Image (tube, rainbow, N blue to C red; front, top):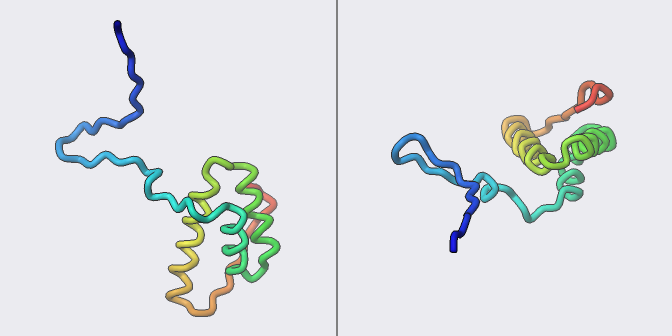
Length: 96
C-alpha cells in the first residue's frame, strides 16, 4: 500500500533559517467590523474612513484584516509622536 502526502511547508535554501507560518502572528480575536469601527474613530471624518475601509473589505476580502491591523498600528505610532493628530483620506473615489 502506497500513501501520498501533500505538504505546504516552505523549505529554506539556507542553513539555520527559521521557517514559520505568518498566520500565527495575525490578530484573530478582533472581528473586521469592530476593527473598522475602532480605526474610523481615529480619523477626522469617521464616516468617510468607514466607507473607505468598507471599500477595501469589498475589493480585497482576503487581506482586509492584515491591511486594517497595519493601518491601526501606523496610526497608533503616529499618535504617539503627535498627541492630537487628524487623519484624512485622500482620493477615496479612485479606488483602493
